[in-house]
Amino acid sequence: MSMGGAIATMIDTVTGTHATFLSGPVMTANLNINYRRPIPLGSTVLLESSLEKKEGRKTFITCRVTSTDGSKLHTETSALFLSITASHLLGG
Ligand SMILES: CCCCCCCCCCCCCCCC(=O)SCCNC(=O)CCNC(=O)[C@H](O)C(C)(C)COP(=O)(O)OP(=O)(O)OC[C@H]1O[C@@H](n2cnc3c(N)ncnc32)[C@H](O)[C@@H]1OP(=O)(O)O
Image (cartoon, rainbow, N blue to C red; front, side):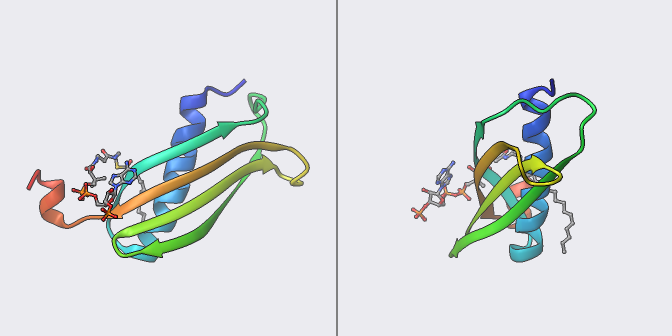
């Protein structure tokens, strides 16, 4: 079975790239993952990331991880990304 943290990394990368594409530089503020079914080691899965809404600096993204044919739901996620400036990255 795949580790929950590895699955979270996959989801953070996909949703974070999606949020960056939509909103520019962002940081993950919240990642809420429901693990519904285990992902067998070595299996191929589909990640589907969708924009839920944008409110000011906040970009809300949802993500589903399913089997490639969509018949098995492995995880459901809601994520919040906040737009940041370069100075935030430098600790400002
Ligand atoms: C063209 C495209 C090419 C793409 C090319 C590829 C790009 C490749 C991308 C790779 C994608 C990887 C994506 C991984 C990105 C990380 O994993 S980043 C690492 C993990 N995240 C962190 O370390 C973040 C640590 N936290 C922080 O730095 C700060 O808390 C944050 C998140 C920047 C927010 O701080 P802040 O900017 O000071 O915001 P703050 O004033 O506290 O709050 C602003 C608002 O957000 C709300 N808020 C803040 N935090 C939260 C929270 N956790 N929950 C709910 N609400 C919150 C506040 O309540 C407030 O709401 P309002 O009062 O305005 O309604």
